[in-house]
Length: 418
Ligand SMILES: NC(=O)c1ccc[n+]([C@@H]2O[C@H](COP(=O)([O-])OP(=O)(O)OC[C@H]3O[C@@H](n4cnc5c(N)ncnc54)[C@H](O)[C@@H]3O)[C@@H](O)[C@H]2O)c1
Image (cartoon, rainbow, N blue to C red; front, side, top):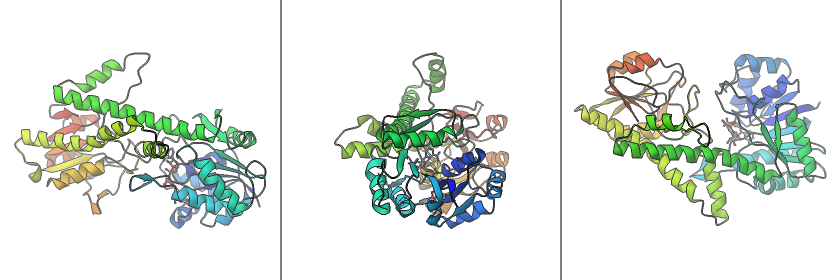
């Protein structure tokens, strides 16, 4: 039996894609190396916050199956690879992309479309994925099957933009490959943008995230400077953001987290290094962004010292430890280096976050506080790291302990802004 789509890697990107295809009445299956992920989905349980259990149950009811058996790939008209592209010892790790391509290759058949959606450096589709697929299948891209790259633009927790209304950049190894990929994505998204080739699409994704990374670094450095010279950075940002042209506002913060923004620029710099190109903005931005957790610790320490309390005797409460608002994801969250820094200076650290059930640093759990108001009463200093929309500003504004707001949102007698 054939299915319209097999998604390889059913995480934050792959599961919403499978759901979107199901909404368009495509027949869908999923392949994942994690038995826990596959079993959970088959039992109607979602592990991705943007996809509710009810949606997974509806998909399963319509025939969706998740499996750890790559043989399911043989049934696909289209295969989309959405596996992680992280770092190992600070360097791009394409292990999952290679492994996924190795799993796909023996199950390819003539006419199938394979798309890579994972973020990676320019050349990955042509130089890494293509040879694995051709070697393992005995088939040729362009002659026998179609190979394309289309970067994912999922923004978890975004209530306004989902897969359907976010324009999708699509490219192919040949013009015919691109045509097949456009036909596939046109069923799922309102607007498809075709790039010249796969390297342009790969580079476009890295540009999008590097643009964010560098602009965040710029406002972070402006915040550090303003702190040193006594200028209210939040007022500066408010004023600058009123310019209706030529200025895109970004906000400073405690550091850059998540699976993409701090990681993707390293894919770009690694490719630049390999090509002998000195990408100076990337290293400068990293230097600034990496300093922010340390700066937050120093600010908290200064606030305590002003109150005559040494950090080693202090109870510090971290408020919001996920890497972005309203999501449970703690990957690369700056809350980790901040908790580590505070602990190393002897502080007793706990956290409050209604989205994060468990938060551990270097293998040691950080105690969880479920009652924010009570935790604020017990703490010497609280640090707002993530301004989840569920947080009651009145409770934070009237905190009985000193509060360091790294998001520039809370005003009150005992509140200090980053
Ligand atoms: N999460 C985001 O917000 C986001 C946004 C845009 C782009 N991306 C990119 O999309 C890609 C996927 O990210 P994600 O956040 O969905 O990752 P994820 O960790 O949420 O999910 C990846 C899934 O792939 C599975 N997997 C790993 N290796 C596999 C293999 N060899 N074969 C089959 N399955 C395998 C894992 O078990 C996991 O379930 C990455 O390149 C990421 O940079 C992510």
